[in-house]
Image 1 (cartoon, protein in one colour):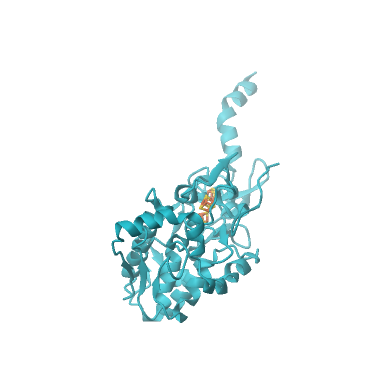
Image 2: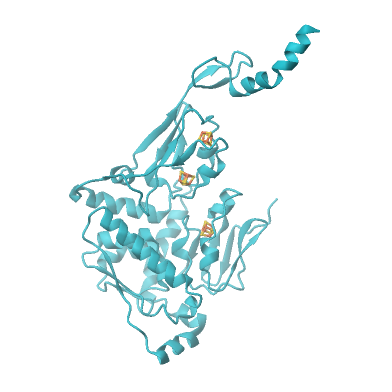
Length: 361
Ligand code: SF4
Ligand code: SF4
Ligand code: SF4
């Protein structure tokens, strides 16, 4: 039995191992948080992601990037902040005034804030260069990539909102001061007001029946509000936020592995267990379904539908007629030809010479 701790805590920061994709599926190699952590506090121990609590400084830089929301910090909830952004007087988001590191937000959070806010969302990136958390540049790069991805998505769906950035060069003396601040000081920049947003994600995680990350639920709800004003809701190109799937009927064996391992229930079986259904809005693009499928029957598909995403519409990707195999009498997904299951067919093919020889003896 594995020795992993299911909830690991370091000061204000907590990591729930059961939510990590690597623990969901043994061969998953997500390393987003490992790459981003400025202190190298995540380690792979027996192929499981483990937080070395004494190395974590609780800077919150990794939180927003986890696709399954495996991290929380007690004093700030990015979902709560994004959901209430429209009611805030200050439209500029800065690590000096309103949030810890801007790395705490993901593309979903930025998109929700842009779609719900009446004013433009402005991100102050002036402090990234020279920040003690960004010495290797990865955290700053990740924040910029997420803002770019948000703007690409908003442009694609033809809404006027964009995320703006402030990037004023900080004087050399100020930069040295930032380095001197140290990690403890960075934690202090988490403001008192943010405590008001604490409980939203924690409450969501207490609902084991809902596997979809809260940031995607917020996004779905924000899209519902803007859909009536959009020119089109069907897109043929890929988006940085949504993922689409297809299953090749001839290759799929209806084994059900993809539905069993999908961490968000984006893939599920029909009530008669003879088909597979896919809900675009729930897919986080983790790739587990493609990795686990032995005959490579499931693959990515271009395009997405905002209506499907926002209203959780699901599409049936395959449906089989189950018939009884004439050899072993077990039910199997019939795809035409002789009513003989794959296992019996390969057995017959492999041993046909032996049967012929035995008959001639
Ligand atoms: S980012 Fe999330 S899913 Fe990925 S390795 Fe880290 S905890 Fe696991
Ligand atoms: S798509 Fe692949 S994993 Fe899913 S049921 Fe078909 S064969 Fe199995
Ligand atoms: S459908 Fe596939 S890629 Fe999407 S969340 Fe499920 S397992 Fe991950």
